[in-house]
Length: 450
Image (cartoon, rainbow, N blue to C red; front, side, top):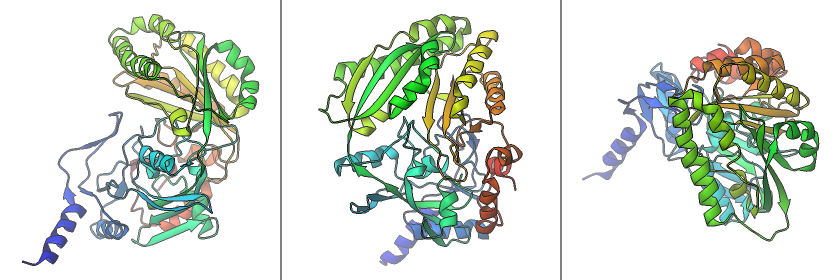
């Protein structure tokens, strides 16, 4: 019996499977019904899938783990699943880079790098996303000098609308590199990313409760004195929880097993899930719960390798909006947000997260060309969020806020053309790489036009 036909049939089955169930994102607020799914096991198979979609007159989108709250990856055409495109292709210790397949989850990358004695310089606070999904939407952490994950990219490989494979870096196709590091899936489907890495290091984290008034009055100093500073404000209270991460000579002193269970699992996930469920059922209890929750976490200090300090488990599901405002406008913006909440009938059970990033040179980065501060507002899954997010968005946009591309917002291309000086550079490149809009969907039509 010939094995060639069997292999061909297997590839075809993997390449084009009719989808009966709808696709939903992590938060459950976005649903899509693609005509078919494709799970390519190689760049060649992905290129073939793109050409087949074009021949069939279907749009095509790649989806990672669905951690975006927007419909950035939704499609009614062909849905590309990259879970077979995973793993490290190459580590170049002399150049200080690692090349990784696009479907690799950040968690797997961080673990693999740690085994090799390497690390990214900065990262976000969760690591469930794929590397391509995280970078395409501008995922970031907090840092005085170190920027988003996308800003750590040194090279990209992507399949373009005609099925060809394009590589880009500062030296090769630099105009594509300047935009595709945060490409929203509009320029092509990323197949591999080369990141800058460095020898693994230790971070000492200092978590400490602090009043809202003190954080605001001391913000400039807290920002200047720490490599990575962030804080959470609990609405309906004057309380915050702060976190300062700085490089350390050691020794390693990780969070103890009991403390990890108590604060990271029981309080931050288990109990937090329970109180949010109570708040959703009985909103009137939320202010009282917030006062208790904001005092539940105690001060602690620990030292560990980067991904164990930067990231935390996030098992409580929510919907999120986040805007980047000029860093100089943070204090005023946050005061306006607090005043709005206090004067409203809103009941908000999730803390507001505040982080920073230095200016970078990526066309559609939320920190493009300006030092930025991020303000993220959340609502528990299943809780009406529109009134809160609408009021918050009004405040953010008054300060020329730029929304995170993967989080809820109502901005459109007209707005973005006013807050991104290089917006036209991106759309011109899209016209060249995808003139027939093979990679378009409703979300891209809204945010970058058609």
